[in-house]
Length: 217
Image (cartoon, rainbow, N blue to C red; front, side, top):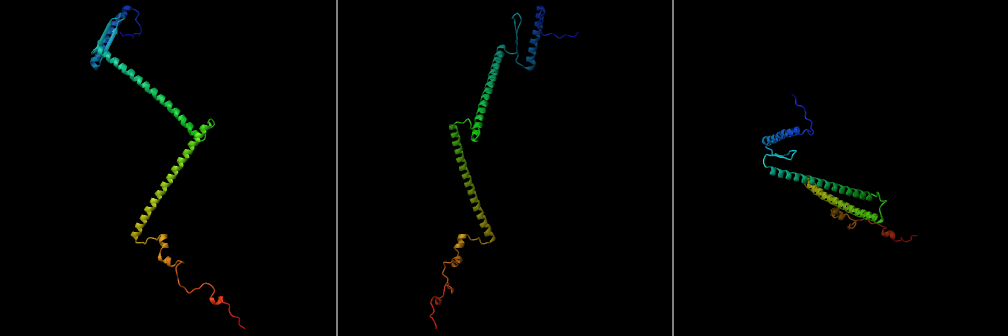
């Protein structure tokens, strides 16, 4: 005979209810014992009958198992509370960051000359001073960058000059004279207009022409 499916609801007949309680109670206690033995689990089972009679099973000690249960539930509640507190803290931080971002965006727009209609004279003066300080910093940085580039070019020029001198010496080529050395050379000193050179050339009218000739008849 096939066993029918039991409807899960309170049994109205008191005798049938008591018989069912006894059978299911024994079966539940047996399952708890089997679970503790087969799986090496710590099991504690407490049952109160409809008349208030206590039935219990514990694989070790009922009190120790109950204390362990209280510790576990306490830690779980504490852990859940910590998680909730952390979540609330993160939400608060996110809200503060959003406010800071909005303030920075508003400040950026004002520095770009946008949204100045609601600004007072004091705010406009503060924005102007901030822009002036920014321009001074930018110009100082630009001057520094120019100076660094010039110094690098000078160092590169020195290196190229030294390499050129080494290559010239290796090739046996006389290095070209600089402008100062050319001006100080003996040839240029001899050919300079200030040097004394004796020539037979005379510039100007001859002495015989400078005198008036006597009248001849």
